[in-house]
Length: 333
Image (cartoon, rainbow, N blue to C red; front, side):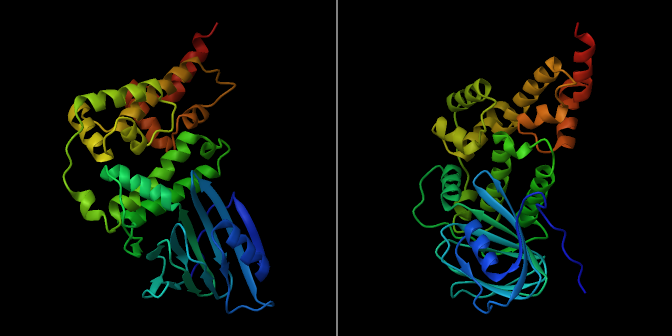
């Protein structure tokens, strides 16, 4: 018998139910209207549903203890179904079936109803990404508006590429959502993780705009780059995304990134991370160790990976964050 997948987002349970009507309602409320066409009133679904919001993205873990078929209404947003255990035959409208397994996920596009025929002990991670968010990010990357809908290649491999990045990001979200720091309550951290999910799909998963995104782009001139740096230095606490920053200085995302590379030998987000390291150091130097921790200060500035943060901090300032705080305590009157 195959080993059950590890439950994700355990600290955010939404429902645990054997009742078919209750399962139908909670899943419809969390995602989109759906039904179990082959089930009867007596069917025991043994549903476990955990759901968390990351910015505007809905991320959930759902498990069924028995085989079940699920049909949905036409989607208005993008859905990514990532099997963690078991197998499901996944269809979108009249399109070809895809066999979802722990090696292969499926992306469902807006305008199509989904049909999932799930084995017993099936579990999956389910992402719902608003259509508007994906299209805005795509337009920012291209530097122009788009008319044709964004259509991804339906199969998403989980062994590498965007699938592995999405899985790693979801596991990171699971890890930090279980901490008492409440990191996901901080807009900087939530926005960064949301962007990681969206950009991993747009920049690596094949879609009908992939060729356009691969074309060379002219670098932004010194003036837009200088204006962007001015905005970052004036408001390092803002939950910046590169797309928002590019919009403020009236260039495309890729043009701004290329401009930063040529002008400052860095990227906009790397530049911002260095600014935030300075802010964290300033706070730690004034902090009362009895009232606040290093992780709490770092979380306020959007740090999601503390090991990497500590290494970057030591590289930049030649000491550990805790050493900065201890020196502050010993120098206080």
